[in-house]
Length: 111
Image 1 (cartoon, rainbow, N blue to C red):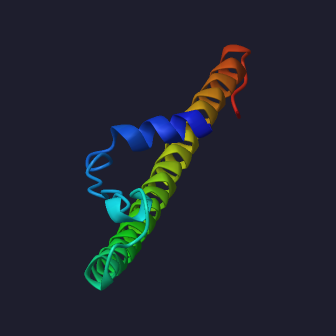
Image 2: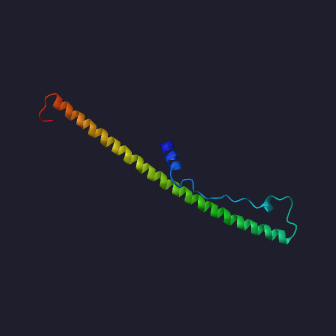
Image 3: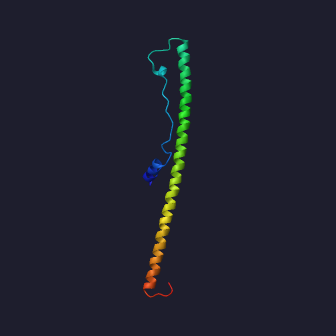
């Protein structure tokens, strides 16, 4: 059932429209050595703040994608349950018709 839901989500229109881009860590964080001067220190701190903002935006985007995926899965689950009910109703109707036919075939006048 989970595989079916996962496959259904992957095949849905818009399922692959995610535009969440994971940001890259600023180069200055892992660069060899220490900060040479106040300017390099402040510059790297600014890059780190920008990186923080980019990571927060990425996480928000990921949360929206997860929420959208959950909604699509729930919609598909509802579609599957509706299809299962319709299938069961058709089978029940067929079985009732066969039972009625058998009753008539056996000479029953009130079936």
